[in-house]
Each structure stands twice: as structure tokens, then as C-alpha cells.
Image 1: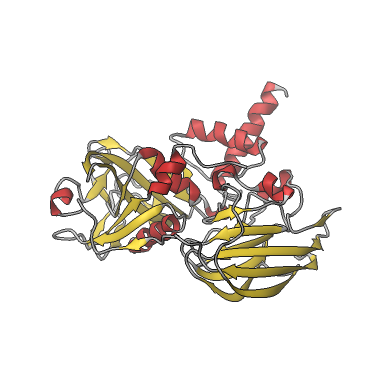
Image 2: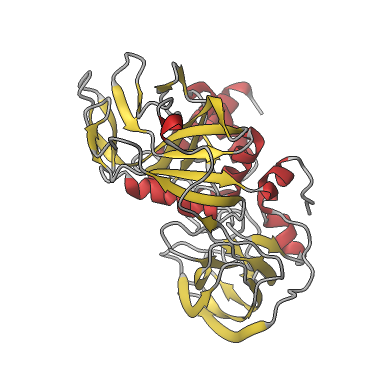
Length: 408
């Protein structure tokens, strides 16, 4: 490829990605076992799990669901309990007027146009049969394909759909047989507890209540803590579909170009550096609706503390939800406007991370003199009930991070 043409493509890719017109990768929050060849090619490696044995629990129900090509999501009426297996088999096909090929349950082969389509599950092509367990606002879709066996860690309402845009209409139908099996023996659900050893007033005396900008102006509230090794912390975020944010614009342009060449969507745009413990964030993570990457995204910053909790690494974070733009009171420039009810974002972090099966314990701690209302460094206001979310990662997260998890 000619160098000048390559540069033009890179800039075009960066412009599109930064403008937020490409779909964000949506990874399953479920442990999955899928034996279809098509699924093996389209499932993201980060969500692959060891091939599971047949469910050992008793089958609780069996139900057939019909999907027509004009449907996006269908509520099955099934409530899945934590730890239950969702075993599904799909047959049928749909045809799109702009495609020469029919789509089967695994979806059409992905092409360049997939980069500008807003698909619920970006790791598969248009027309694939997909599922979702839990609240639509936070549950991550997973691929059903021709056959799947997934374990839901958080439980919730089961919906089944077709991986397509809301404006798509396919000609045809899918028949999906769904079976629900009770949890395997030994399944451990996330433990909601009133306290975690080491989470006390003494610990919070060492943690600033707010992060700030380089000039020292106070900003977002510290509203969550994670206890566990660095690799485990990274694992729980990536498994939940959060994406590590690039550090600067230059990295964004290059990353965007490389991602476009591999037919993957691009979510990450630079996250401004903010400060805690005298330094800028160690990690930035983002989760967004694909068409609204610039204007709207769930995002957070996280710092490694210099002290531990009960002998384990402590991560201190601040999470907010960008919902648009507003004037930066410091310089009259343009900045992101956050949802003033920041507890919603704290709860979003909890829902997405606990649904991975990599969190052992959860508690909400109310520090002395809790922060209830304040303004960010850019002048935007926010309010909270003052509680700080605390997540203790499981031994499974440590094992997986050590590389013992089998990959398909």
C-alpha cells in the first residue's frame, strides 16, 4: 500500500472511531462452551472457557422460541438463577436484501461493512443468534450460534435475539430450543456481605475522597475499591467487556488503524489524566454504546494504592458516566458532562464486574462524613449517597490471570 494512502486511511479510521460511529466490542459475561466451528472462529478469545462437561444439575425447564427476521430481542419469559446453565440450540436462516448469502445461526461472515454497523454482539456477524441474561442496560450479549452452553453468574431475565441493527429486517425465521439446568454442585455465587476484613475507617483515612486535575482542583468522587492482584483486576474488566483506554491521541490513531484492519471495532478514545496519590491514573477503562463513544460512555480511572488490604493489593477508582458535553468552567472550553447521579455508574460497575464470576465478595462501605454533593474540576455538579463499592476478587480470577484457563 502506498504510504500516503496508508496515512489517509489511518486518519480516516481515527476520525470515524473518535467520532464514535463504530460498534464497541461486547463480550459475554458468561462462561461459555460452544462446540460449533463457526462459533469457535467468532467468539472473542478473552471470553473462551474450557470445554464444559454436560451440566450435572437437573434440567429445570425446556422451551422453544421462534425468532423472525424483523426482531431484535425477544423476552423468553425465563428467569435464570445464578449458576444455572443455559443450553440453547438454534436452527433456521434469515436473508438480508443487501446480502447474496443467507445467514445461519452463527451469522454471516464478517466484512468491512461490519465496522460501520451497530451490532449488539460485535464479535459475530450480522444475523447470528445471540442471548442476554439480565438487565438490558448492563447485561452483555453472548453468542448462541448453532449451539451453546453458558453459565450465568448473576442471573436474570433471559432474552434471545438476532445480531442486527434495529433498522434491519431479515426474511426468515430461527427456532431456538432453550434448556435450563440447575447449578453444578459446588457453584459459589457472589457473596453480598456487610463487611470485608481491612475495609474500615483506618483504611479510608489513607484514601482521598476525590481525585483532582493537575492543578489540584478536586474532581470526581472515589466511589469503588477492588481488592486483588493486578492481573486479576485486568481480567475482571476485560471479561466484563470493559476496554482499556489509550493514553494519548497518537496511540488512538495507530490503534484505530490496526483495529480496522483486523475487522474489530474501536471504542477507546483518550481519557484525560487525573490525579490521586500524587500521580495520574494507572488504568483507564471504558464501556460505551457504540454510536455514542464521544458523547456517552461509561468510564473510570483506577490507581494502585501504596498500602494493602489484608495482605492483598488495593485498587482505588472513580467511575462516572459521560452523557454529553458542557462548558469547562476553568477555561471556557468544551468538556464531557457527567450524569450527576454518580451512584448509577457505581452500580453499573458492580453489575458488570460481578456478572463475570470473578468476584468473590461485595460490600458497600459508608465512610465517616460521607460525600453527598460536590462539583467536578470542570464545574459540573454531582450527588451521591456516599457509599463506596468494594469488590474482592475471587481465587478463580487469580487462577485465570495466571494463564491456567484453557483456550479454544
